[in-house]
Image (cartoon, rainbow, N blue to C red; front, side, top):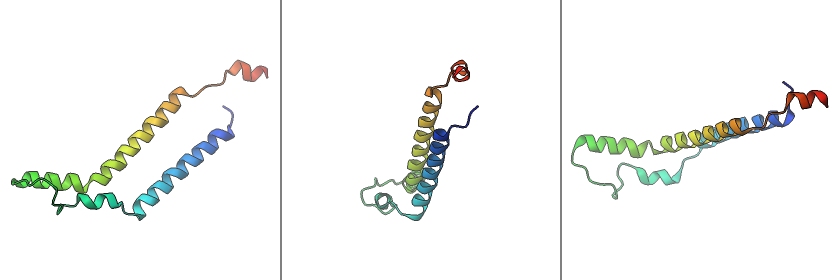
Length: 96
């Protein structure tokens, strides 16, 4: 298998993008998530303690949910690219 500079550059850029995204996510807050706090007046009033605890957990962990969804989409895109990539014919490469 030959070393392909374009594939190596693409892998380097992808890894760098993931690192930059992770640093950006950990260093900055998302203002959209401030509305998902437990004291939000627009949330449904649940009288049972189980419902309140589940609701609180779901709204407080929304950022983790979005990050997980982004990682799943990224993984799906990488998988599609891996499946659909073109392979060079060994006979053509040897004859050239």
